Image 1 (cartoon, one colour):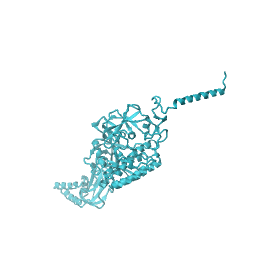
Image 2 (cartoon, rainbow, N blue to C red):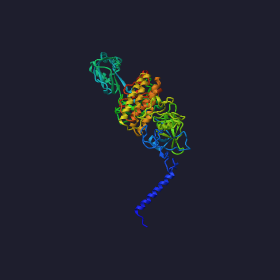
Image 3 (cartoon, helix red, strand yellow):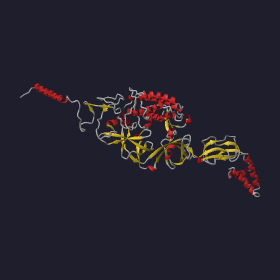
Image 4 (cartoon, rainbow, N blue to C red):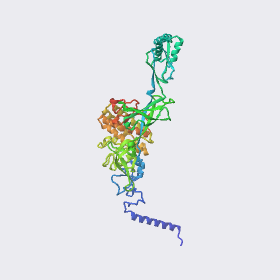
Length: 607
């Protein structure tokens, strides 16, 4: 039986309509979706048949469609559904996507030999044992100068000046008379020769005087040592006394490198340690030496002790007053095979130090805060005294992001060790939160967070860089008020700094740089708020340290160009040392004011 094409089309439409009708009857009454197996779905949370989208940095955002975060402008991600039973309620869950966006990385804590890299700054100096005073051995008047300027090289025995000496003329006349009766009075003749020899005349010179039979008016002063003239103490026509120093001569075939060792580094430095150092004016060359001497007395002004390295200088390339940068790799012999973790993994709460430990409970990725006791700092890592075991996996980057998620979830965090949601205030361009709304019952973040070292740069809009330049300019009056020991003015200027920080538009920076700025912003806001509300000048000064450190790292990581300097005082913060930023190379210490106004040094030119 033949069926026309028209009939086939009609039959197909009927079947399709019937299927749609049956599906409507079956599913129309359902308002929720049954749980899918892990093999069939990726644990994405579904509500009323729609995927829920959230922001990895602002978990409070919940939307029924994809898009951008209304707070920070980041792309939204699917919300991971709750893993259910078997999960520690104190742990914070993070999806792989959230970890990637927050730059979270983990590593196992391991046992290593603790080695601390100690950076030293110093200068090349003359070896004091090879510096000589060239004196006049007899009195007289300078008639000729053979060496007329400092820096000139002289050889041992070379005539360097000629003197006219009446006393020497008289001594020659006595020699002539004694020579005539030398056979009858040999002791008198010997005494006359010895008198001239005591004035450093050589035997050949004395014999020449006897042979000529005439007293010389001028006699040369010969160099007693080879070296460079570093001081010239006489001029032509000067009268000098016997024993008077007329030149200072230094033998530079061997020199000293005098390094400054800060008080806090002295326990790590010992006589005999190897030092690797470079000299700025001799690029590409590295020298090695051993500490020959460590000053037993600390300079009361700079709080440093000098350590000495003796170096052979055969080619004379090392010149006094050259700057040198040294490195000592010090090992703690009593702490071999210690548990060591990266500095970036530690969050500081002032009295406590915490890390986030990765757990294997349930499904997905989970982190739980753990308090640790830290030993000595190893520049970019720490020795762990207690709280961790070798092999445990911890967050080595992005710990701040995990902590922020824990705060928003009301779980234990560095700001709230017992749990409880914490208000986190950011300005993201459209949303401005007044500093007066901040919760002052909690410790300042600046007291809690040790700023990570700058190790990466991020691209940002020139408008964003200009706004950070404005933050730097607003920071300077705060620093200046602390120099003047004026807490009231510092508080007022800090309010202006707050307003400038609030104007920074986060939407001008994207991706990982966006996350980095969120971390930086928290510290800048908290430290500035600390100065605003402090009437005690010393407490306000303590807040300048984290503010300065964070601002420096923010300017560097976002490649903001400023005309300024980074300066350091080793005595600030109870001799722990602290940095600050300045637009002047002159040292004006904001941590001590008039008490020690010039204590410190320039560590980096930011121009």
